[in-house]
Image (cartoon, rainbow, N blue to C red; front, top):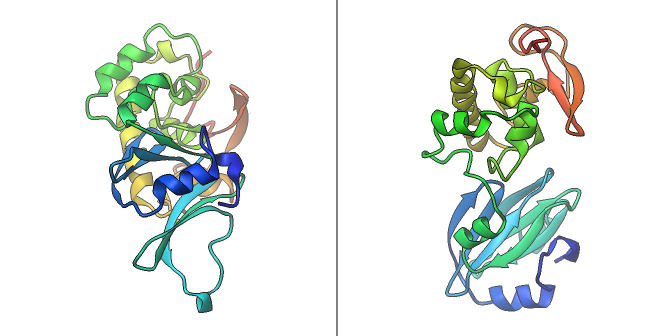
Length: 239
């Protein structure tokens, strides 16, 4: 444990005691939270923030150090290791007795990929909301699992300007938004961290700043205090 500041509600010694000699039996995800089932003793909760990721590896003394920015390392009996990597130390590590109870206590909205969260449910959520649609997508009490980067990506793929009033979207736009939300998040889950599809806005926003669809120059603005990338040709803001 190299960064105790990422622990939430637990000390390094207690975490070590709760994990030592136990097995990690299964995993679950809800929104931005990953839960690992500990044999007979609740769940380990990992939140990776904006710059975090997990890594499993085997690393003998002759093979060099742990991955850079490793904040927590779990050592397994068979010789493997799991690292919790976080560059900016903005993530969280904690223990919970039950993921469902945690979701309820944190007042999280439905998971963005929940099969029950269909286009109709999204339409009900957006109806009457006067704030920017990007802000609504990022609010974890409305929808769990969408952060700044993926809100931009979803809205780009849907051809919707991030500052569009959430409640002003037409039914066909909501259908498209829901479809692209699932498409983008599923593609992101399948991709390696540095191997996103070429059609992703994310692939271009830190490089050539060109729209992968029209080739036009991307622009930046600010929505709810967050830097936002937009293609002015594809994502027009209605007056």
